[in-house]
Amino acid sequence: MNNLIDCFVTMVNEEETSANAQALDALSIVKDVTIVEIPLSDLDTLRMISDIIKAPYALFLLSHGSISIGQSALEHMVQAAEENAAGMVYSDYFAIPLDGKRKEMISPDYSKSAPGKEFQLCPAILFRTETLKNSLSGLSENDETDALQRLLRHFVEHENQVHLHEFLYEIVASSQSAAH
Image 1 (tube, rainbow, N blue to C red):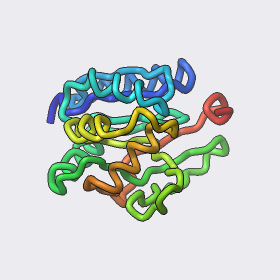
Image 2 (image 1 turned 90 degrees about the vertical axis):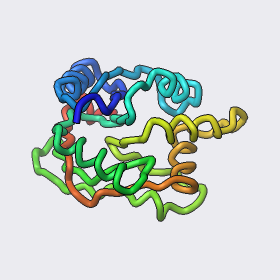
Image 3 (image 1 turned 45 degrees about the vertical axis):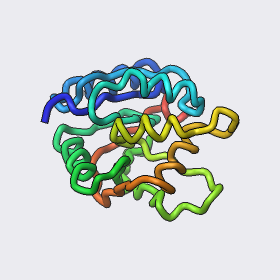
Image 4 (image 1 turned 180 degrees about the horizontal axis):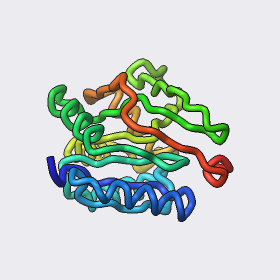
C-alpha cells in the first residue's frame, strides 16, 4: 500500500511537530505531510485542508506529544475503512506521560456520544477523503461552534465510523507538550 494517505500534523512545538512529520513522511503509505499551524476549530481551515488533499485518505494528527505509528498500523486503519465503508477510523493507543509509565488509552466511542456534548479528540483520526470533503460542504458557515467538533458530529450522525479496539500507536509526552 503506497501513497494512500495525506497527513495533517497540528503544530504543538517545532521540535515535536517536525519529528512527527518526518516519521510519517518516511512511511510508504503516506503520500504527503502538511504541518498545520492554525487551529482546526475554524471551518475555513478545514476546507483549506480538504482542498489540498490528493490521496484517498487523510490522517489528522492532533497529538500533544511525539507519535510512534508504523506502516502496518496505518494499513490496518485503511483496511478497516475499506472493509466497513467507513468515512472515519480511529483506534486506541498507548500514552507515555512524563513519569514514563506506559498507559493504555481507550479512545472514546464517538457513536455513543450524547448530542450536543463536545467530543474528546483522539490523537490520530483517519478520514476517507471523499467523505470528508462532502461532509465539510454540508457544514453551515453561520455556526460559530468548533468546526472540528461539528465535523465529528456530522460523521457520527451521517457516516459509518470504525473504532478499532486495538492499540495501534504510541504518544510520548515531553515537558514541552505537557505544557499544552
